[in-house]
Length: 525
Image (cartoon, rainbow, N blue to C red):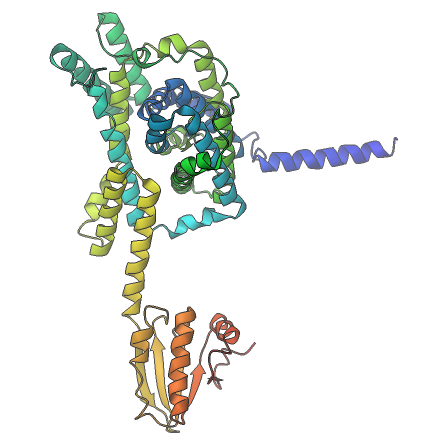
């Protein structure tokens, strides 16, 4: 027994170290500014309240549903995520997606859709699909962000209407509009005065104090729904477990999962650039999936990474998971003990905040690129913006943008294939190909050859080209077959190893091929 005790201690120490490494707590040490991390987390928590409430209202849900999601998603993503210092919670992108589902079928279907979306995100992490973010071109990202900003801003129009759906008028409109403008002005000017307190929080406090002190009659959060509650209750969705239910929520879940991962991975890349470090996209997929599953189980609307809150956290100096954990825990404390105050928050303050979020989200720099970027990129950016803004389908918008960008890229490369021609001292004709040989360039490739006038031996030189796909192999097969029918031989040279392997696997298709490279031995194994 005495001999086994040191072994037990050693094994326990190793397992503990592995656990700390997994949660990325190994970096915590004397160089970590714990005070700054805690204050940054507290600041983020205070700023999360109005956004979570506003996003829940956009989705047509109880403000408490947004706050529960902000707590659960924020906590799980902070602990398990692939980017320390990044903040997750209830977001406008998810709110826009689930709004029709909540309106038509109710909140139970929202919980189920969020949980199913979490499963899809977990699968994305398991199959390491986080790296696919690199396939999204910059114009598509610009269009995505700009469309999201338009959606968030446009959703605030309804706040200028009363409960009956009529536009506010007279004193009500002046009071509400004035408080909105005041809130926006404070948010815009606060960073010039101090960055110690978020401008959104300052605006809410000032507008709340002004409305309360002057006894202004204006809409409040409590007029819409009560947010009084306790710890997020465990609640499995109460709905029929049928295939029809699965079919109903499946489209929403796919979009939630796609948009959530796109926005999270986009935020991760932005934080990477700011901190000069590198996050783990696949781990972030796993974290977001776990967070959304738990959010649906604990009465939350789901969410993803938040660009604005992450930037607030990073700019405050936070670099570890402590700030995100503190933000989530403090948010729960506000729910448990500060609900009565939150219910008195003027909606004008939240509306002003969301309008400033929309303005800050919009990539104004993208407007300057209209004369600098290629026309095709500008068209892709505008198209993605319009699809996002008017169809409210962010995943579809990104998919359309990526497909069109890929087609434009393929077309541009298809027109760039060329062939330099010369005859050597042996009377062999050389075709030096440059530009990729793929499905888009096979027609122009075939037009380069003059079978009837060529000598008995021709050399197709791929030093500045490569065989990319099945269409390219088929094009080579047709060219070599034509020369073979004419009693002439084709020699393929300077093929890269990957091209050689591709052709070797298709040996049955290419009937005539002579791999010769007497000078450089490029294709030798």
